[in-house]
Amino acid sequence: MSLYDQLGGEPGVSAVADDFYHRISTDALLGAWFVDANGADIRLHLRAYLAVALGGPEEYSGRSLRRAHHGLRITGEAWNRMLVLLAESFRSAGVDDRLNAEVVANIGTLRAVVVEVR
Image 1 (cartoon, rainbow, N blue to C red):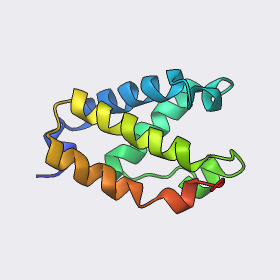
Image 2 (image 1 turned 120 degrees about the horizontal axis):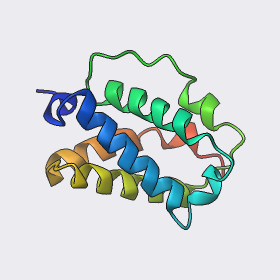
Image 3 (image 1 turned 90 degrees about the vertical axis):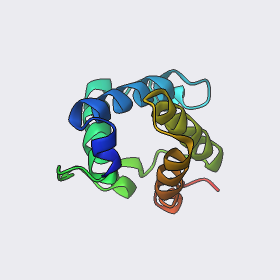
C-alpha cells in the first residue's frame, strides 16, 4: 500500500500539504520566502507534487522543482528546516516514524535541485 493510500488518498495528502504550507509560510526562517507568494497556488502545487511523490494516481504537470525554485537563493539551512517541518506535517497526520523517515530521506535527495546557496 502506498503512503498516498495510507494517508487516506487525496483528502489525507491535501491535509498534509495544507499543514506543511502553514508550517513553512509561518516559520521564522522560511516565512520570508512566502511573504509575496500566492498561497493558494503554492498549496495546489504542493498537493499535486506530494500526491505523485507518495505514490498516488495523479500526474504532476507543474514546473520542475529546479525551475520553480530558480533564483530564490534557497540555502542549505532553509532546506534542512523544510525537511524538519515536512516530517512534522507527516507525523501530525499519523505517519509512523519509520515511514516518515523513509519519505523525508527520499525527498531529501532533491537537495541539489533546490538549494542554490551552499
